[in-house]
Length: 249
Image (cartoon, rainbow, N blue to C red; front, side, top):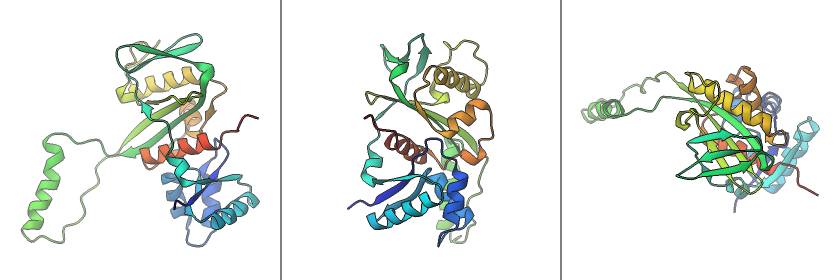
């Protein structure tokens, strides 16, 4: 049987107050609380019994952190992503290309708009991907059983955005896989072009529910406190954004 999750209901919830709340609870330090919120952003607890979730929610709301409780299986019900190769903004909607034919989506139908970032090593390719692991296995096979852990190389920042429509369409945008040739005023930087594209889409979708990283990215604010542990954490935050959206009626 799946457990229950306690999620912050504020779409643009900052991780700072949540980290301070968790740090005051048994078994947490401020560092471990921040790490938990990087890997499960917006979630104060996962895999809880219903009784534990209710108690955690009550404590969080008493501390000024409005929350909701969800069965964990609901977190895995994200719409399947479509990764378009290009997006062209028009007056009432945008065209995206995922195959031979363009698809039109209306701005008014976009219900959620989120952006995410995380740091990770650049992908290795060719011999560079094989050499470190191969040499390590050869040395260990020769009896070198106490090798130090592999040195951590330089990290790159990866960016992503998700747009979800009322019909359940989900576009997953990545700057490295988008063609920006149709973007007015495009420049040499993929990240800069990505920011310009998201700013244009953001200005045309005022009714969409957004996360904090999107606003910080568009405004050029410090992103370091808002970066996540990776794409799985981004999926979790998007699920939270969709599940905690106000229900009509």
